[in-house]
Length: 343
Ligand code: MRU
Image (cartoon, rainbow, N blue to C red):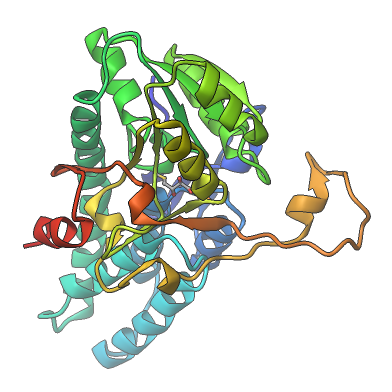
């Protein structure tokens, strides 16, 4: 059975607390906008599409549980709460994309009741669409592999990072349905171990042969383990194809290029941000130093040691073999081809 990380329950959001995995599978109830903000900031929910879906449901929850004195008051408050949610994490563009989509859905509306209904419906639609989009990404990704192939992935771009199926892990889900056996190498993904805690757990639950490695084993593994390709997700793809994803992705892309291993990014159109011209313009989130000073809550470094903790890096487009979206795979002239996807 596939676990859904985020579910709309009309008067609350049911959320899988991903910080507790793999030891505990616990669902929590989000009942306020502050609960939603905290969940995104604290990584109870993470992964670009799942963040977008949760934020959309967060705004839907807030509009449907708040009283407003007038439509003008509603619109002012809505804008403020939207901005508040946007401040939870800066890099994954799906957060901004999903909330902007809700705002667009009420452009021609003049009553609070109608606006509330539309926002709730739009949030549900974003969630439903993401499932189909991820499935399509998997369909396209499957055309790149054969029965028995091994793929290496980084971080977690799986079902729990999306509505269902994931992006980089979608070919594993679809392959499983069709009897196409794929093997996986998953990097542990320091500092907060999304690869070890989430990807290894998710693929193992799916019945996929998955091997966990530490992040510093990538070069040796790509060189010696007959890896067909690297496949990762994305938090934001700029107009020229430069891709922000979990810290460490850039290093893996450099290694893959040097060893001649194809490097694919799997992401929905909602992760492509044509308004960001190139990678340098993407804001990179820096997180708390204790993520690096500790491991599983135990200190592993001097308590006050200076730390640099960027949560993401940017892989330049020239290191990317192809970008797999729901509309197909693009492999060259990313700026032109990405723009075409939206025309
Ligand atoms: O900090 P996280 O766990 O939210 O980072 C997640 C990633 O970098 C994923 O690879 C990306 O969001 C794609 S999820 C389909």
